Length: 419
Ligand SMILES: [Zn+2]
Image (cartoon, rainbow, N blue to C red):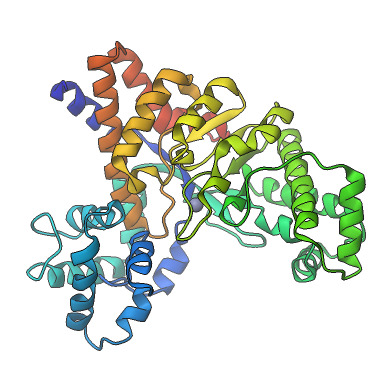
C-alpha cells in the first residue's frame, strides 16, 4: 500500500468535520448527573462479551468486590479469556488515546493510572465538549430519541424511535400515547392519525427521520396487509382479546408499511436496524434482504439501513446497487470488526454510487467511546481507499472525494442538515 497516500487520507479523516450518523450518546446533562466515570463503568459493547463469557453482567461480577484492586482482579480474569475481541480493543484504543495508557494492553502495571485519569477527566466540566466537538470534530450526532423524550440540539439531531408504534396493540403503550396527545385511539384510522401527529410534532422540533430496530425482537420480513385485516386485529386488541402471534405480526407489518409511506410523504428518512443483534439473537431475522417488499413498494421513501447489515453486508451492497432509495450506513461496524469493515467498504465502493454511502455512526453511550470508534473508523477508511487506489484503479481524486462524502457531505444531504 502507498503509505504516503494513506497518511494523506488519514489526515483528511481527522480534518473533515464528521456527521455521526447514528448515536445513543448520553446527553450532556445526564453525563454529569451520572457522576465521574471509572475504569469499571466506562464500558460499551464489551459488556456483551463479558455477559456471553461469564453469564453475568459486569455489575453482577463486581458485586463480590469491595475495592478497585479487587474489581481489577475480576476484570483481569475475564480479559485472560476474551481480550482478543474487537469490542475490547475499542476500550484499549480509548485508554491509549484519551487516558494516557502506557503500552498496548491494560495490565497490572497501568490499570490504576488509567482508572485515575478516567475519574479526573470525566469530572471536568469542559470534558464532554472537548471530546465531542474538539477531538471528534463532529458536526452533529443523529440521535435516537425514544417517544416523549427530548435532546440537546447543540449536540444532536433527532430521529424518532418507533418500536413503540409496533406495540400499540398493548393497552399500556396505547395509554401513554393517548395521554401525550390527549385523545383516545378508538380505531385504526385514529391510531394512524395519532402516529402522524406525533411524528409531525417531532419534525417541527427538528427531527429528520424515524427509526425502527425491530430486528432485535422479530423478523425484518414484512408483507403488505390490508386495512381490513389490520382493522379487525386492532379491534380485537381494543376489546382486550389475546392476539395470536400471526395477528401481531400482521398488525405490525401493516404499521411498518404505514410508517414507510408516512416517512416518504413527510420527507423524513426511515432508519432501520439490520444485521448484528445481541447475545442469543436469531441472526437470519436481521437479513436486510427481508426488507425487499417494503423497499420495492416505497420508492419515494429514503431508507437508511444500519450496521452494514453485517454479516449480510454483501447482500446489502446489492441492495444499494439495485435500490436507489437505499443508503448504506456503516454505523457500529468498525467496533464489531475492522476486517469486516474493510472488506465491506471495498466491495461497496465497487458497487454503489458514492453519494449513498454513510461512513460513520458511533452507536455508543459515552462520548469517549465515540472517539475510540472514530479512530478505528478513520484507520479502516484510509486503509481501504489507499488500497483501492493501488490495486483497483480508483483515482486519487475519487478517493479523496469519497472520503469527504462518506463522513460529511452525504449525511448533510440525506438528513437535510445546514452546511
Ligand atoms: Zn443503535
